[in-house]
Length: 403
Image 1: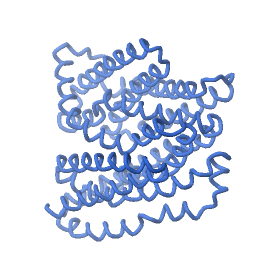
Image 2: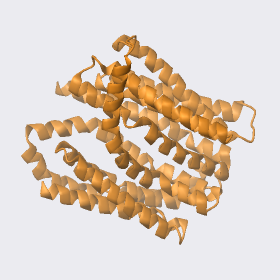
Image 3: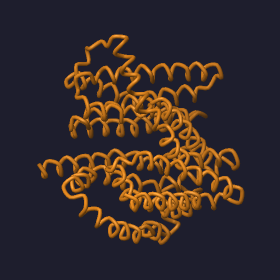
Image 4: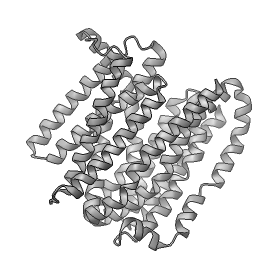
């Protein structure tokens, strides 16, 4: 049993790393092909994509997983189709608005968010059913399609003045390809021919909304800390400056991606240990926490020690200042490890309200610091993340001490 779990965890971890590595390897191409201004514009659109996705998905992935573990797979298609119907209606409304404003970008972003949500549900279904190979295959297909289509539209396709739009089109088609393959495979594991009645769709929709609406503020808090800085910079600085900033942040984002992938693989073992002997794990928690704090600065120190010429070689000649943002965002992201140690324990105890409250307050702290620091210089903006993360960890540690 233990070896099987370890094998599955390793497969998920390997798949997560591969699927995330391919888009990262595309970064130096995009920074050169789009230039600082175009890359900044693309980063700004990604902010809107993240916001649209929150409202469109309503945490359908989590709702599907919870339904599967609590009620089984018998009526799972009902919930899935209800979620797809809800996302489709939201997408239709947003597309009408985009068309009325003549915004091609708005149409692209809406369709990408729709397909990302649908694909996320399919991946959640695979993970629930422990179909690790299928899970990785679908993720890898999306990543490969994303890279290949981007290279095709930006390099092989006749270059136009709408390279950013071409990148969005590549993302749209990559999501569409992966989703079509995933939905076809679902017919082999779920009875996809079921046609839910209106009553069943209504029940499925009620379930999704009951699960997803309370989590909106939780997701918005992460949106604020992960995306709003780009929106602020786009409004107050040049798009070329946003391009340099975003390139540095994306380099630093490798760290949380790796940490979350490792966390996803180790979480079943952590919860298993808590289930067997909670008191023993609780006693070791402070030691693990202190050790993790000791390693917070290490990635940032390594990034600072690297020569600036290496960043210029990787990103392009106009991205020399990106190193500064990489270093300080690595410092902020380095706090993810102590955060995960504490928050995973609190999730196990079912203290979701305390976690959500901490995330929300931390987001408010971040937003206030962003508005203050952003008035002085872009170089102060990373400190908003560092201080707000420290506040969140302190809040969660206090919750652990109470329980």
